[in-house]
Amino acid sequence: MAENGSVEEFLAVAVEAAKKAGEVIRKGFYQTKHVEHKGLVDLVTETDKACEDLIFDYLKQHFPDHKFIGEETTAACGITELTDEPTWIIDPLDGTTNFVHGFPFVCVSIGLTISKNPTVGVVYNPIMDELFTGVHGKGAFLNGNPIKVSSQSELLKSLLATEAGTKRDKATLDASTNRINSLLFKVRSLRMSGSCALNLCGVASGRLDLFYELGFGGPWDVAGGAVIVKEAGGLLFDPSGKDFDITAQRVAASNPLLKDAFIEALRQSE
Image (cartoon, rainbow, N blue to C red):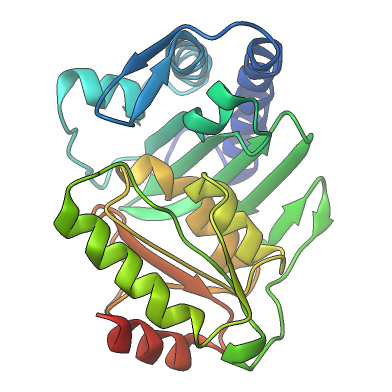
């Protein structure tokens, strides 16, 4: 465990940071947005940048010896290597496209890894005022109440979430839509909410039964939600069925009853 602080302290400070950033997001949500393009459809706003600065500054005041990885700084400065040191991995505004359009599925995602293992997770949607938290070995919560994954055991009765991603080349889009086509025959329905972190929390809270995404931005999309899913009794894995790798930009999540059938359905959709 990290020397300078307990997991309870890490969680409390992360929640404070998320709520401070949430205030900025809430104010910005109802105002005119100033948008830049990171790619063809990948957006960034001044709110993303302001929130990352705010969260980093707040966490660094409390934990000056910890390492930090953030979406916007990484986008500007290149990938930061994940080490065994306590490392805060932050997405200051997951669901930027939703934010720009005034669609209320937006959140702050803060994760702490220790020895590369997701240990503390905080995901906060300030528009809906939903705070998801998880600490390794201590359970997962929504606004202080315990949450757990669904008990659904039939793929055909399951609600699946995925995302379209930000790439728009024909090969990627064809692979995505062919996969979705195949899966839609095997599940009840499909959702694209526009936030990887909130999709993970959806599985953790039983709102969603299944989630997968390929080629998302980076570890900041999953670092917070990963702990919350596991602590809610869910499973995280690579869509191929291999072990989950926080740096791989590939993730799948489900309850334990659906994992094998889900992996088989994903394999058949390739």
